[in-house]
Amino acid sequence: TDGTADVCRSYLTDPRIRFLQQPNRGQATARNVGLRESRSEFVCFLDSDNLWAPGKLAAQLAAFERHPEVDVVYGDTRLIDEHGSALPGGQMNRHSGAITRKLLLSNFVTFNTAMTRRTLLDKIGGLDETIRRADDYDLWLRASARGTFLYVPEPWASYRVMADQISSDKEGRFESNRRIIEKFLREHPEFADARTVGETWSRFYVRRARYRASRRDLRRAFADLAVAWRHQPLSVQPWRALARIASLTESRR
Image (cartoon, rainbow, N blue to C red; front, side, top):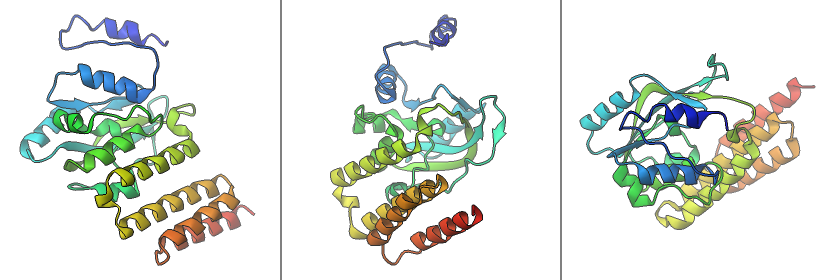
């Protein structure tokens, strides 16, 4: 509704560009339409509020040439505001290789930085259209069970932070992530050993506790920490979170 269609049509004289439009049925459905219509050996996604860095595609194709064993190449992202000015944050620990167990602890594969072999996406059936939030996390978990990832420490995308975007609903995203993890562990029992499951859920509830504490929802934050301890009694993560929450609470008095 913002004139995107008119802008896209102005480029259709280039035979490499194809423009598709449909009623809104969710982002996973839209991405699957693009995936089915695409013809390339490699696939990338770019959401409407984000930007690719110049040279991203060429650099990733070169990485695939150097590493033919790899199925997904991804990098870093920088945060920007609605005017394109840089914001702090956006950096995290990222990993290469068989990353499933690390990915269960945190989604560190930033969607718009990634380039994926088409064959891998075909194997796993694209995106799950029943998921309305965090469909990228579900995709990467399933892809990690079948493929190899390569992280390149280059800022290949800018992520625009705005108040009304889908990902700003943190509680909704936590709930979607919880369901995605449950589904993945159910469908992939080879990753559901006691140690992995315990660490996965402990980290999940610690993250949500920290978020809820930042929103001054202390009752539910402490309830999450109790669940984290139950899943991994000997972990230091809940204790660190408790200390951080306590210091946050003290500083606000």
